Length: 294
Figure (tube, one colour):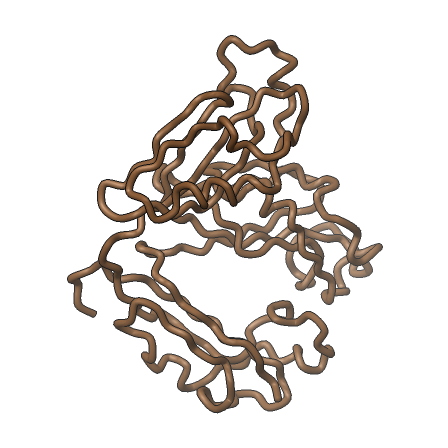
């Protein structure tokens, strides 16, 4: 059977725009969100899934192999929760997924509405929601630039801008989630020192969950397959070849008007549009504010 898995939709309190960024190997890539949003990376890969992308000036021997893809988790680690993120792709991928093939990076990210709080080490700050409750999105204890919390600090304490704590999120979430106001004092909050000798600070991004949630409104939906890489891990190539696979009834508004919705991606819910192909359910949706009718 060509399915498995289910999809849950939850309210994001705003229209979500998905940005797809493709850059060639060994260059700088730059992500950004507006003043009201922060980066949330959905996927990041290095490899080649098309013979046309980033192919100018390259011989066919370097562009013909299109079954090449590897996840790049460093993009998630370095960019999530920031308003802007610049990365040098050299050495970013954990390994070469296809030797001899000219590769590129593809990153999908969304900008989510968030507030940002910076707390210098030894100091404190307040997280506050005028309406609703705090929900921590991301948190880092370390240093990602040379200017934040730099006043009066010697230069040698500001040089390491690649300082990230792998476990900063849990203590902040435990202290603040569900509250209308939260005081963050770094005393006793900081986890293990991620970069000895560097003056560090907490960067916390959070959203305010309204007391009254909005309602789901489906924009587009498809049960099928439109590329060879999504949900492809461990699947034989013959189950991934048909990328023109669309379900005629995937737009059935089963979730419209609900605050949350669980949809099972199975043949019993959706008509099988392409027998023998491993399929997935892709849904684009937005959230209607409370009081607005569909």
